[in-house]
Image (tube, rainbow, N blue to C red; front, side, top):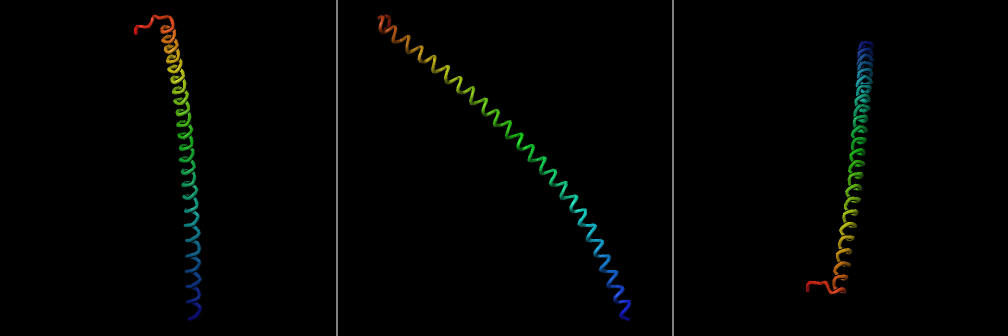
Length: 92
């Protein structure tokens, strides 16, 4: 009577062991695929941030250039006004 119970327990444990090993192998492949997808997403995010930073730098450069041009024009206009005042050509 003991022998069939021991054989049944041995067969049950072997079945559980091989089934669990096979499932674990499938989970590892899925985890590797998910990690690969996560890495691809991270690379896309890094590229997006890089492009955003380049665009922001270009916009900042344009704003500085425009401000410098406007300041130069304002100084030139002020100099002309002072010159007109000194020469007496002012309308006032």
